[in-house]
Length: 90
Ligand SMILES: [Zn+2]
Image (cartoon, rainbow, N blue to C red; front, side, top):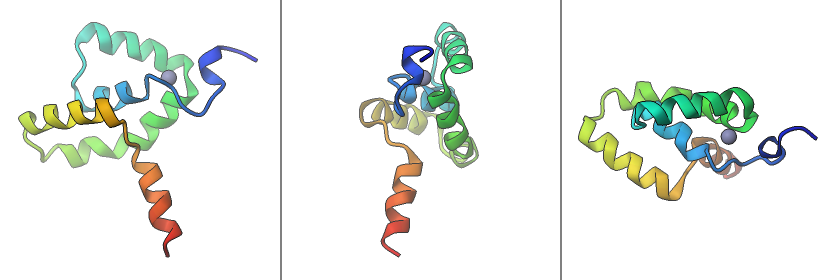
């Protein structure tokens, strides 16, 4: 019964969390999202879930990262959901 955006399991800022981890946000965007993160459990969970990405992406060229960021902004895929479906096939 608190803030509206904590009610559901998804958040429209979800994609921005990925962008934040990719370092693809501008400074104002980053600060704004950090403020949002403090209040949004969905994004906190997303940040936690995506936390392993930077290690993975550290080996990816910057130009590719920008490409990935563009595609994630459109489709917004969460690694966890992929894992879940893979686990189900076993
Ligand atoms: Zn959020």
